[in-house]
Length: 207
Image 1 (spheres, rainbow, N blue to C red):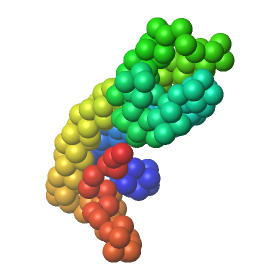
Image 2 (cartoon, one colour):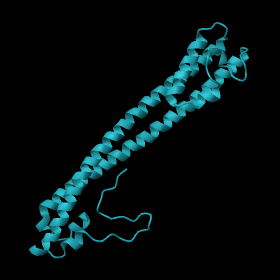
Image 3 (cartoon, rainbow, N blue to C red):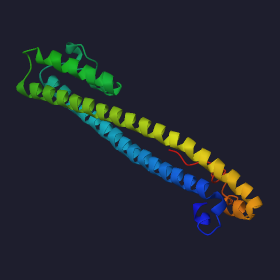
Image 4 (cartoon, rainbow, N blue to C red):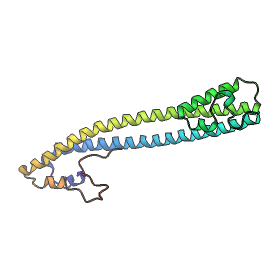
């Protein structure tokens, strides 16, 4: 539509067109911001998953050391009041981190462990802290995405208002010597597949 406006006589809707162009630029910028932060959120979630996997590996290493110390192979963590490594791995992020910290605390309070087991316990605790940090990062970026979408949506409402005003003005222009303006600016949408069919130009895209 804005491309068509560059070759049309838009004097009768000059102010409305300028307003729409301004709102459109604002909306495009807001949508780009949403897209950029959404990419950051995907990256933060990927880091959280990687940190959680590293925590699982650290727990497996700790379990092996405890077995070497004489604890039960089926669940080396049983003596410390914790579920098996496989059950810990299935816990939600926050619950898993809390369980690991409790486990490590219980292990460190006993003297019947080797130096390598103590080292493995510290490594598991560090892995849990990394998960905590990754969780905080995800929460921060999620909040930024929500705020960016709210801003984008508010601008979208102004976009719709400016669009409607321009459309009404272009229709009225037929009485002011520009009978083709509406048809030029608001051309019917091209045919698209059933999957992607919609009212082109009637609404900005969102993510």
